Length: 324
Image 1 (cartoon, rainbow, N blue to C red):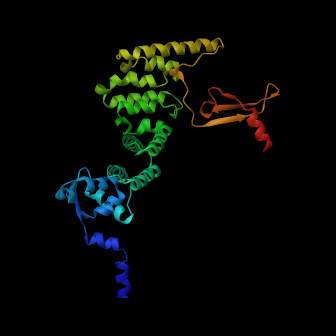
Image 2: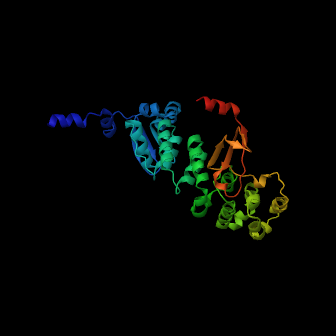
Image 3: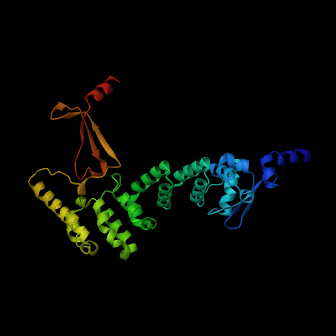
């Protein structure tokens, strides 16, 4: 029985090598005082960072005793667990920092594990932070996933998220101008801009014109725009807002006038619809007593407001569908 237990305990030679610090030929030190004897060949196998570090440093003392800036003992422990055993404990409270550390140390497999974890764990509380990390480190898949979540949940985020209020103006602007922003009423965007400016009005109210420029002011209710938006102090006190306000006034007046005259109006940039999250397709059928060969795509959110549709000739498509 003792013999079997002994074999079990020593069945993982790598564990014994690490725990007993056997054959170590370098020492890594974290900024908070952690000391980690390691094997250069093992780290070099998993990390281009260490491979380059161990092969380019000229002085022996530097090569074998290295301080890693910006890496904590906790992160270093998790990194080494992965390098030596292929195991890592990724949790919601460490995934972001572990991702940054894995990226800095050039460990692509661990980096992917962290990205996959964050994609699965994204929620209202962490989506902004995940989006910012993904942009900072240029992780395309994670960035797309986080951005899609933020755009889809924008209404709730704009009203509740404190993280959204900490975004720099460039990042908030990129969200507001997105075609895929999921808002039924543009009033939500206006209120988000106000909430963001009110967090630090002295330094932020000058950005009002730039943010309003990418909003869709022409889709606001005319009464709300005239009585609330155009008369708000952030607007009236900023000369850069004047051309945009004048353009919107003119468009809303034209909409009201031409609607009474039953005439069409070309939609300008300030009133361009956003891409709907849900679309209802009507394919084929009859119109005016005749068989139709068009697809009509309706914005499901606006069915009770308008019946705008896109018609696309699809005779070949319909013929193929009939054959099947």
